[in-house]
Image (cartoon, rainbow, N blue to C red; front, side):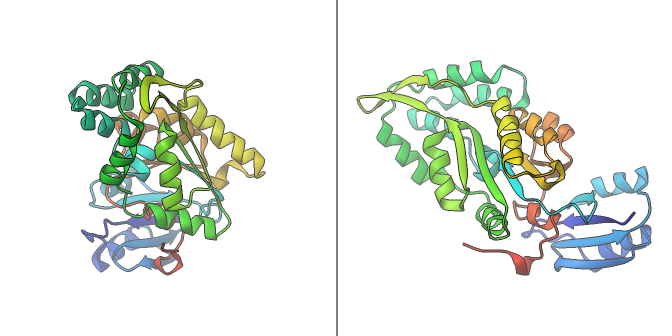
Length: 291
């Protein structure tokens, strides 16, 4: 059966040379190769098994890789985490930093991301520390601190333009997912609701809390709604909270993932930006829809 090995480099530190192309094409007795973006993304098509030695060699390279069935790799549903995936920060840590209490919050966030503590309890504990923060300060934090991950809007807009559904589901907050969706084009967004009174946060979050169950349930909901096969779905995230949806998707992508998340992912992106998810589907750079 024909398979495709896709290599994806960091666009700011190009690592896929002609020598690399020839090296892996020769080792796989490739039927043919195709540059998706010269020196950045390459498809190598082949008809043999990949040995453990070859996998280990690929893991040592300064680029990302995936082996897939070329017939089923194009996806019609993307479900994405937000914090440290679609955006470059953890919003709750930035809110805490705005209040001058980041040291009290960030270690809890990291423990939750690693799967070392209960997510719901950790969220409530951290939100309680935000009590008294003005709602107007959320806008300041968003405008000054929230930055899209490179490739985020291109990923979403390209998939939208090709008929896919795109869903942002976050253990963070609706204040941010709504604005990030407006910037990128996500068709649906779901997250937790920060409660407030008289213009200030109460230190509480509304029930039900969006957690790992919500994420996998959202993936299944839209897969069934759009009558998709599992292989037509893709999920991307970085933390332990994302593991069930990564395991439930046709392609689960860990984006600069924590160790447990990397282990649960079909593919780990440690070098490329979010356009890597387009290259994995066989999109060429010329197919990208830019904002």
